[in-house]
Image (cartoon, rainbow, N blue to C red; front, side):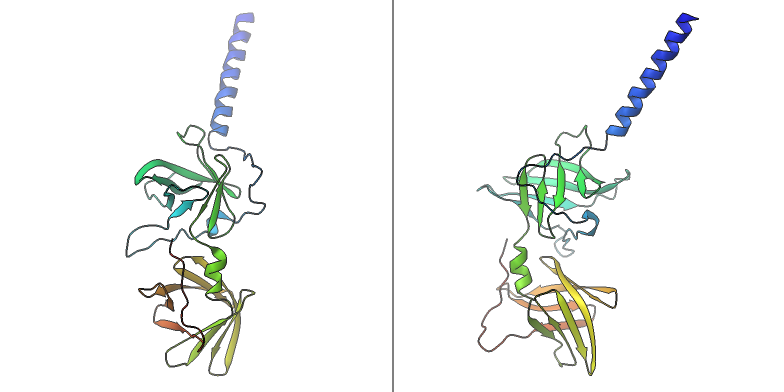
Length: 240
């Protein structure tokens, strides 16, 4: 009887350890550093900036270093694991030194505990992310600078039949004939602008000319051109 009880105890202990191992495999509790962002945004709302023409994603450059080190956040259609969001690929000196799958954990994207490189990523906004593990910031551009190219500016169709006025408080007004509709706007990547009118979201592609001047925004057959004042000679994006 004693031998049977011991066998049952050993079996229950083994099952308990196996359960704990499986439960902990995907979840890693964040360990914020001193300069960790105080606010984060939903990772599922981040546009990773895929360029169909080039077939590549935006580069997120590592900050605070002279080295040209950047990361891609991309999708992998072959991954079918629960909570998978994207793949993090780190390029250093032109070579992919890290490639890890990221999984959703609250407002964070984390790697599995058995991954070669541990990552715990949170987004401060559409242009800046922070890795809690390495205490590192990555950026794909200056958010304030990108916003400045739309704040308090007007974009209009060539025949002036419709115009969109963007205000610095991230509200906007679309005017067509005598009809006006209020909405909100947000630059979500270096090449995309999102507007919401009557709870309907429209994504506009940002068109730049050879000098990286914001020339127009377009969605399907709608194209709006930047109205530049007489004393303004240029309106440039910073190249990253």
